[in-house]
Amino acid sequence: MLLTSFCSTRSHVIAVHVRKLCIRAWFVDYLFKRDALPKGFGPGKAPDLGFLNTFSRVLTKRRGPFVERRSQCSSTQILDKMNTAIRGMSQLIELQFEWRDLPLTKDTRVFLTETRSAFDKTLRKLTLQAQILKFKELLLITNFACLQELDFHFDYQTSDLTTSKSNSQEQTQLLETILPFINHRRTILRSLAISSSSTVDLSDFFVALPTMPCLQQFGVNINFDLQHFSDFSGLIRFLKANSHHLLHVHLSAVTPITVYDRKLILQQKQAAWAPVNKGLLAEPSCLTGLYSLELPFISLDDTLPLVRRSSDTLASLCLTDHFLTPQEAPVVIGLFDSRPFEVRHVHLGVDVLQGSFIRLLANRLPNLSSLVLVYRQCPCDLDDVSLRGS
Image (cartoon, rainbow, N blue to C red; front, top):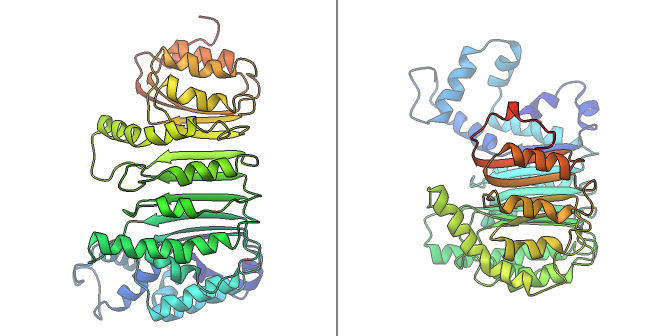
């Protein structure tokens, strides 16, 4: 929506300085639904359009030339202004595009074409969030010769198709559209992140991922259960093939959609991750020499051997999906006894947040610049905790 403000006499001067652009495409869909409202639409007269009613009532209550001028523009005019603004962003290096499940129309396709062509030669980082079946339109006719970072999120497919038919089509798009897009840039990509809330099985996609000689950062945020990830060998092979140059690895599990009990969620996520964890343990070259590492935690015996592979180089550690007991927490911190000043970032879950643990962190990791502690219980007033010896 803010793109329309570029359409002033200084629009080119403003646009040329933009380096990062975030587009939430729900606004494009809103514009056309707004145009479809009956004439004379106002408070008390609108059909039941949920959020649109609330949003439009807010607009009618506000005053000022900006709102009045915008309210006189049609959806097509606003899109034209947005396209003009986008064409002026000649120095843009990062684009975040959230499409989700919005429909593709003639006007939105024009908008996508403008977006793709405008940043073809400058873009360094591309973040796309959409249903897998929409990626073909989003990635169409693009070269992005300078692209170095990719972050793809596959949204849940909401359609009238049967689950099996939808998954089949998504599999086809993964292997025939998204994978070639990644493969074409395999020699220049420095960062790749894949997350998914789709029901599709991602195993074949990971099996087909190529070696990327410049890749330094790799992230996965998916559901690791058998329905969504029936064969984890592709992920293990990818980590092994790129182990010599990877510096940052972030592996996290998506929360099951149908489960709401937190304890059960953690149990299911750990059970789904356990086979992958076992596969990583069987490959000694995986997760070595890393600068930052994020992993789901299973147990000291299953998780710490993976962390130790990079304990001489890690500056950042994040362990998820488990609340460390008062006995486990000091063991994890003890991994860095030989280099306490090099660790800068720690993210842990603890069952009980005790003053003794805070003192332990202060004494044994004195150079932390960020600390995230997720706790289940906090029985004491931490304001009264002295950081001096216990």
